[in-house]
Amino acid sequence: MRPLARILAAALAAFALLPALRAQEALFRPRNVTLEPGPVRLEAHPEAGLLTVRATLNGKPCTLLVDTGASHTTFDRAFLTREHPDLIQQPISLHGDTNVQAELAICLVSSLKVGGNAFEGFYGVSAPLGHLKETLGQEVAGILGMNVLGRMPFRLSRRDGLLAWFRQAPAPKGAVRLPLAADEGDNCFRVLARAEGREAPIPMLVDAGANVTVLNPGQWPTTGEATAMETADVNAAGRSLTFAQGRKGTLRLGELAVEVTPVVRGDMPALLGADTLGKFDLVVDGPARAAWAVPHAKPTAKETAPTEKKETAPAEAAP
Image (cartoon, rainbow, N blue to C red):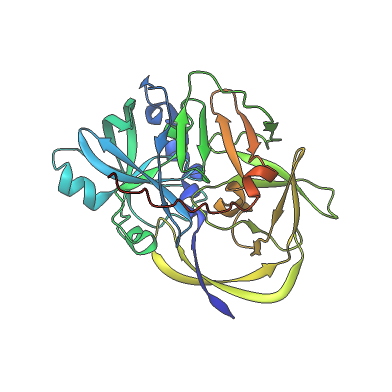
């Protein structure tokens, strides 16, 4: 058994399965959007392998987890009760296929500002998320999900810790268009990946909220070793799950080939996690349902060559 690693399991993407939300999706889509040129700086959490961003909810500061695997922006119930006591949290009932065990509510977001970007007039989800502090090592007020992230085209760079929205999707040099699975009506994106020796494509949820890439049995070869991982999701944190350790290999995302060492488990969806997303910048056009990968440029010989330290002789004192 290998040492415990941290993974934020994609159970938050279970919101994508909630008919109660899907039927009223327009209510969760920001009506007004104001964008400011330039990227927003993100905060990296190396131990958890995740990114957070500082935001302002209805005029009060908060920290949100950036999660492309979460269909809806969700706020911690205790945070809302403490910082926004006048905000009405209307309970909702869940029906159908979902693994969400917590009681959920919805609340009206007058304004959510991320950097100079403002998203106004939409409903957010309220859920008990205080346990995510254990995963990230700091208090987190909620999750920035795809109903807001994908409202306008955006570029996410895990390597540089930057997030930027655009009126029109940018066309970066060297960008590779990603093949996508059919739209499931949940705001999220699933890339059709291909594994070595397997012809059938694998729909993989693009999930910046999971720090490892996950595949299912039969989709990827394993080493025969097991890896224990401490998980957190919308229900709880600190649950230890055992995964089969996948072999290192090449995963093809359209014309892009990336080296991955995934873990394998059968009771969760295949995830393209932050460990893989960190190998390229992700460009997503939510309204057009399109996505691209921008591979990171390889350093030039000049950039990688060792530099010689030059010693400067001390200046002589003036007479």
